[in-house]
Image (cartoon, rainbow, N blue to C red; front, top):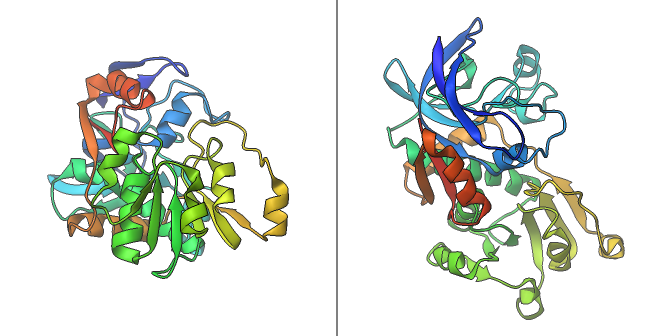
Length: 319
Protein backbone atom coordinates (compact mmCIF):
# COMPACT_ATOMS: atom_id res chain seq x y z
CA UNK A 1 0.00 0.00 0.00
CA UNK A 2 1.34 3.41 -0.99
CA UNK A 3 0.84 6.45 1.22
CA UNK A 4 1.90 10.07 0.97
CA UNK A 5 4.25 11.05 3.79
CA UNK A 6 6.52 13.80 5.04
CA UNK A 7 9.92 12.10 5.31
CA UNK A 8 12.82 13.45 7.38
CA UNK A 9 15.82 12.67 5.17
CA UNK A 10 18.49 14.25 7.38
CA UNK A 11 18.59 15.95 10.76
CA UNK A 12 17.97 19.70 10.70
CA UNK A 13 16.97 19.38 7.07
CA UNK A 14 13.68 19.83 5.24
CA UNK A 15 11.05 17.12 5.06
CA UNK A 16 10.36 15.70 1.62
CA UNK A 17 6.79 14.95 0.60
CA UNK A 18 6.74 11.66 -1.29
CA UNK A 19 5.01 8.33 -1.63
CA UNK A 20 6.26 5.48 0.55
CA UNK A 21 5.24 1.87 1.13
CA UNK A 22 3.10 1.30 4.23
CA UNK A 23 4.26 -1.83 6.03
CA UNK A 24 1.18 -3.48 7.57
CA UNK A 25 2.16 -6.13 10.09
CA UNK A 26 -0.03 -9.00 11.33
CA UNK A 27 -2.72 -7.71 13.74
CA UNK A 28 -2.18 -4.13 12.53
CA UNK A 29 -5.02 -1.75 11.74
CA UNK A 30 -4.71 0.94 9.07
CA UNK A 31 -5.83 4.40 10.22
CA UNK A 32 -6.73 7.16 7.78
CA UNK A 33 -4.98 10.13 9.38
CA UNK A 34 -7.07 13.28 9.74
CA UNK A 35 -4.88 15.28 12.11
CA UNK A 36 -1.49 14.85 13.77
CA UNK A 37 0.19 17.10 16.31
CA UNK A 38 3.79 18.25 16.00
CA UNK A 39 5.16 17.47 19.45
CA UNK A 40 8.19 19.14 21.01
CA UNK A 41 9.75 15.68 21.04
CA UNK A 42 9.41 15.62 17.25
CA UNK A 43 11.41 18.83 17.06
CA UNK A 44 14.13 17.37 19.27
CA UNK A 45 14.30 14.34 16.95
CA UNK A 46 14.42 16.65 13.92
CA UNK A 47 17.41 18.42 15.48
CA UNK A 48 19.22 15.10 15.99
CA UNK A 49 18.73 15.04 19.76
CA UNK A 50 18.18 11.27 19.96
CA UNK A 51 21.44 9.54 19.05
CA UNK A 52 19.82 6.13 18.61
CA UNK A 53 17.69 7.35 15.67
CA UNK A 54 18.75 7.57 12.05
CA UNK A 55 16.93 9.11 9.06
CA UNK A 56 14.94 8.54 6.99
CA UNK A 57 12.11 8.90 9.51
CA UNK A 58 8.38 9.52 9.35
CA UNK A 59 7.62 11.29 12.61
CA UNK A 60 4.31 11.99 14.33
CA UNK A 61 2.83 10.20 17.35
CA UNK A 62 -0.18 12.41 18.19
CA UNK A 63 -2.43 10.77 15.61
CA UNK A 64 -6.19 11.10 15.16
CA UNK A 65 -8.23 9.73 12.28
CA UNK A 66 -10.67 7.10 11.15
CA UNK A 67 -10.92 3.32 10.87
CA UNK A 68 -13.81 2.08 8.74
CA UNK A 69 -15.33 5.55 9.03
CA UNK A 70 -15.17 5.56 12.86
CA UNK A 71 -13.27 8.38 14.61
CA UNK A 72 -10.32 7.11 16.63
CA UNK A 73 -7.27 8.25 18.53
CA UNK A 74 -4.02 6.31 18.36
CA UNK A 75 -2.14 5.74 21.61
CA UNK A 76 1.26 7.29 20.81
CA UNK A 77 3.53 4.34 21.64
CA UNK A 78 3.91 0.66 20.85
CA UNK A 79 4.52 -1.95 23.55
CA UNK A 80 4.96 -5.73 23.39
CA UNK A 81 2.62 -8.48 24.58
CA UNK A 82 4.68 -9.17 27.71
CA UNK A 83 4.29 -5.55 28.78
CA UNK A 84 0.54 -5.60 28.18
CA UNK A 85 0.20 -8.80 30.19
CA UNK A 86 2.57 -8.13 33.07
CA UNK A 87 2.47 -4.33 33.34
CA UNK A 88 -1.05 -3.34 32.35
CA UNK A 89 -1.71 0.18 33.60
CA UNK A 90 1.97 1.11 33.76
CA UNK A 91 2.94 0.41 30.16
CA UNK A 92 4.74 3.77 29.99
CA UNK A 93 7.54 2.22 32.08
CA UNK A 94 8.04 -0.88 29.93
CA UNK A 95 11.41 -1.39 28.25
CA UNK A 96 9.59 -2.14 24.99
CA UNK A 97 7.78 1.23 25.03
CA UNK A 98 8.51 2.75 21.61
CA UNK A 99 7.16 6.11 20.42
CA UNK A 100 5.44 6.03 17.04
CA UNK A 101 7.64 7.65 14.43
CA UNK A 102 10.76 6.37 16.13
CA UNK A 103 10.22 2.62 16.07
CA UNK A 104 7.65 2.20 13.32
CA UNK A 105 6.62 4.99 10.90
CA UNK A 106 4.50 7.74 12.45
CA UNK A 107 1.56 9.89 11.47
CA UNK A 108 3.06 12.53 9.18
CA UNK A 109 1.30 10.60 6.43
CA UNK A 110 -2.09 9.98 4.91
CA UNK A 111 -2.29 6.57 6.62
CA UNK A 112 -0.56 4.80 9.48
CA UNK A 113 -0.49 1.13 10.49
CA UNK A 114 -0.68 0.45 14.25
CA UNK A 115 -1.51 -2.47 16.55
CA UNK A 116 -5.23 -2.76 17.31
CA UNK A 117 -4.50 -2.25 21.03
CA UNK A 118 -3.43 1.33 20.27
CA UNK A 119 -6.88 2.38 19.05
CA UNK A 120 -9.05 4.55 21.30
CA UNK A 121 -12.61 5.46 20.37
CA UNK A 122 -13.10 9.21 19.88
CA UNK A 123 -16.37 10.81 21.02
CA UNK A 124 -16.49 13.23 18.05
CA UNK A 125 -14.70 14.20 14.84
CA UNK A 126 -13.03 17.43 15.97
CA UNK A 127 -9.64 15.90 15.25
CA UNK A 128 -7.57 19.09 15.39
CA UNK A 129 -8.62 19.83 18.98
CA UNK A 130 -7.42 16.45 20.19
CA UNK A 131 -4.21 16.58 18.16
CA UNK A 132 -3.46 19.94 19.75
CA UNK A 133 -4.17 19.13 23.38
CA UNK A 134 -4.37 15.41 24.23
CA UNK A 135 -0.65 14.75 24.56
CA UNK A 136 -0.07 17.83 26.73
CA UNK A 137 -2.98 17.09 29.04
CA UNK A 138 -2.03 13.42 29.42
CA UNK A 139 1.57 14.42 30.12
CA UNK A 140 0.41 16.62 32.98
CA UNK A 141 -2.03 14.04 34.32
CA UNK A 142 0.93 11.71 34.81
CA UNK A 143 3.45 14.35 35.91
CA UNK A 144 1.06 15.71 38.54
CA UNK A 145 0.83 12.23 40.05
CA UNK A 146 4.61 11.92 40.12
CA UNK A 147 4.82 15.29 41.90
CA UNK A 148 1.88 14.44 44.22
CA UNK A 149 0.11 17.68 43.23
CA UNK A 150 -3.19 18.37 45.03
CA UNK A 151 -5.58 21.31 45.16
CA UNK A 152 -3.51 22.66 48.06
CA UNK A 153 -0.30 22.67 46.00
CA UNK A 154 1.49 25.65 44.51
CA UNK A 155 3.08 24.65 41.20
CA UNK A 156 5.43 26.36 38.74
CA UNK A 157 5.19 25.30 35.09
CA UNK A 158 7.87 26.30 32.58
CA UNK A 159 7.23 26.55 28.86
CA UNK A 160 3.64 27.48 29.65
CA UNK A 161 2.74 28.71 26.16
CA UNK A 162 4.07 25.65 24.32
CA UNK A 163 1.98 22.75 23.11
CA UNK A 164 2.41 20.77 26.32
CA UNK A 165 2.46 23.63 28.81
CA UNK A 166 -0.54 25.68 27.69
CA UNK A 167 -2.79 22.63 27.92
CA UNK A 168 -1.13 21.20 31.02
CA UNK A 169 -1.60 24.35 33.09
CA UNK A 170 -5.32 24.16 32.37
CA UNK A 171 -5.43 20.63 33.76
CA UNK A 172 -3.62 21.69 36.94
CA UNK A 173 -5.78 24.77 37.51
CA UNK A 174 -9.21 23.67 36.27
CA UNK A 175 -9.23 19.96 37.06
CA UNK A 176 -6.82 19.50 39.97
CA UNK A 177 -7.49 22.96 41.42
CA UNK A 178 -3.85 23.73 42.24
CA UNK A 179 -2.43 27.26 42.37
CA UNK A 180 -0.39 27.51 39.18
CA UNK A 181 2.42 29.90 38.27
CA UNK A 182 2.84 29.70 34.50
CA UNK A 183 6.22 30.90 33.21
CA UNK A 184 6.33 32.35 29.70
CA UNK A 185 9.42 33.99 28.20
CA UNK A 186 7.49 35.63 25.35
CA UNK A 187 5.51 38.59 26.70
CA UNK A 188 3.11 38.63 23.76
CA UNK A 189 2.33 34.93 24.05
CA UNK A 190 1.92 35.29 27.81
CA UNK A 191 -1.30 37.22 27.18
CA UNK A 192 -2.90 33.98 25.98
CA UNK A 193 -2.64 32.60 29.53
CA UNK A 194 -5.16 35.14 30.77
CA UNK A 195 -8.42 33.49 31.67
CA UNK A 196 -6.88 30.06 32.19
CA UNK A 197 -6.92 30.32 35.98
CA UNK A 198 -3.16 30.73 36.39
CA UNK A 199 -0.69 33.36 37.60
CA UNK A 200 1.36 34.40 34.58
CA UNK A 201 5.02 35.10 35.37
CA UNK A 202 7.74 36.28 33.00
CA UNK A 203 10.54 36.46 35.57
CA UNK A 204 11.74 33.59 37.76
CA UNK A 205 12.24 35.94 40.70
CA UNK A 206 8.47 35.94 41.29
CA UNK A 207 8.99 33.68 44.31
CA UNK A 208 10.71 36.50 46.23
CA UNK A 209 7.33 38.18 46.49
CA UNK A 210 4.91 35.26 46.14
CA UNK A 211 6.88 32.64 48.06
CA UNK A 212 8.40 29.39 46.87
CA UNK A 213 6.37 26.62 45.26
CA UNK A 214 5.77 23.01 46.28
CA UNK A 215 6.46 21.56 42.85
CA UNK A 216 7.84 22.43 39.44
CA UNK A 217 6.70 20.77 36.23
CA UNK A 218 9.83 21.42 34.16
CA UNK A 219 8.78 21.26 30.51
CA UNK A 220 11.71 23.18 28.98
CA UNK A 221 14.66 21.42 30.62
CA UNK A 222 18.25 22.70 30.31
CA UNK A 223 17.55 26.40 29.64
CA UNK A 224 15.31 26.86 32.70
CA UNK A 225 15.93 24.09 35.21
CA UNK A 226 18.40 25.99 37.40
CA UNK A 227 16.03 28.93 37.77
CA UNK A 228 13.20 26.52 38.52
CA UNK A 229 15.21 24.97 41.37
CA UNK A 230 15.57 28.38 43.00
CA UNK A 231 11.77 28.68 43.16
CA UNK A 232 11.29 25.39 45.05
CA UNK A 233 10.58 25.29 48.77
CA UNK A 234 12.65 22.92 50.98
CA UNK A 235 11.71 19.29 50.22
CA UNK A 236 9.93 20.43 47.08
CA UNK A 237 9.80 18.30 43.94
CA UNK A 238 10.91 19.10 40.40
CA UNK A 239 9.50 16.79 37.73
CA UNK A 240 11.50 16.83 34.50
CA UNK A 241 9.06 16.35 31.62
CA UNK A 242 11.22 17.40 28.68
CA UNK A 243 14.43 18.95 27.44
CA UNK A 244 13.43 20.88 24.35
CA UNK A 245 16.91 21.83 23.12
CA UNK A 246 18.43 18.40 23.70
CA UNK A 247 21.40 20.00 25.45
CA UNK A 248 23.19 18.52 28.44
CA UNK A 249 21.54 19.47 31.73
CA UNK A 250 23.87 20.65 34.47
CA UNK A 251 23.07 21.79 38.00
CA UNK A 252 24.75 25.13 38.62
CA UNK A 253 24.17 25.05 42.39
CA UNK A 254 23.94 21.39 43.51
CA UNK A 255 24.32 22.51 47.13
CA UNK A 256 20.74 23.86 46.97
CA UNK A 257 19.49 20.39 46.12
CA UNK A 258 21.44 18.93 49.03
CA UNK A 259 20.70 21.54 51.71
CA UNK A 260 17.01 21.93 50.85
CA UNK A 261 16.47 18.18 50.29
CA UNK A 262 14.95 18.85 46.91
CA UNK A 263 13.69 15.96 44.81
CA UNK A 264 14.40 15.86 41.07
CA UNK A 265 12.60 13.12 39.20
CA UNK A 266 11.40 12.29 35.74
CA UNK A 267 7.96 11.69 34.27
CA UNK A 268 7.77 8.85 31.75
CA UNK A 269 5.09 10.08 29.36
CA UNK A 270 1.67 8.61 30.28
CA UNK A 271 -0.42 5.46 30.22
CA UNK A 272 -3.23 4.58 27.83
CA UNK A 273 -5.76 5.22 30.60
CA UNK A 274 -4.31 8.71 31.16
CA UNK A 275 -4.50 9.42 27.42
CA UNK A 276 -8.14 8.36 27.44
CA UNK A 277 -8.77 10.65 30.40
CA UNK A 278 -7.20 13.57 28.51
CA UNK A 279 -9.49 12.92 25.54
CA UNK A 280 -12.51 12.92 27.85
CA UNK A 281 -11.54 16.26 29.40
CA UNK A 282 -11.09 17.86 25.97
CA UNK A 283 -14.42 16.49 24.76
CA UNK A 284 -16.19 17.86 27.84
CA UNK A 285 -14.77 21.33 27.20
CA UNK A 286 -12.63 21.52 30.34
CA UNK A 287 -9.50 22.13 28.25
CA UNK A 288 -9.28 24.88 25.62
CA UNK A 289 -7.05 23.77 22.73
CA UNK A 290 -4.52 26.23 21.29
CA UNK A 291 -3.11 25.42 17.85
CA UNK A 292 -2.29 26.49 14.31
CA UNK A 293 -3.24 24.09 11.51
CA UNK A 294 -1.13 23.33 8.43
CA UNK A 295 -1.54 20.99 5.48
CA UNK A 296 0.87 18.05 5.43
CA UNK A 297 2.62 19.67 2.48
CA UNK A 298 3.29 22.70 4.70
CA UNK A 299 5.28 20.70 7.26
CA UNK A 300 8.48 22.66 6.63
CA UNK A 301 6.64 25.94 7.15
CA UNK A 302 5.21 24.55 10.38
CA UNK A 303 8.68 23.64 11.65
CA UNK A 304 10.05 27.08 10.75
CA UNK A 305 7.22 28.71 12.66
CA UNK A 306 7.79 26.48 15.69
CA UNK A 307 11.55 27.07 15.79
CA UNK A 308 11.08 30.83 15.37
CA UNK A 309 8.47 30.95 18.15
CA UNK A 310 5.48 31.89 16.01
CA UNK A 311 3.19 29.05 17.13
CA UNK A 312 1.07 29.45 20.25
CA UNK A 313 0.33 26.00 21.59
CA UNK A 314 0.61 23.18 19.10
CA UNK A 315 1.18 23.01 15.35
CA UNK A 316 -1.22 20.51 13.80
CA UNK A 317 -0.79 18.84 10.40
CA UNK A 318 -3.75 17.81 8.25
CA UNK A 319 -2.77 15.06 5.76
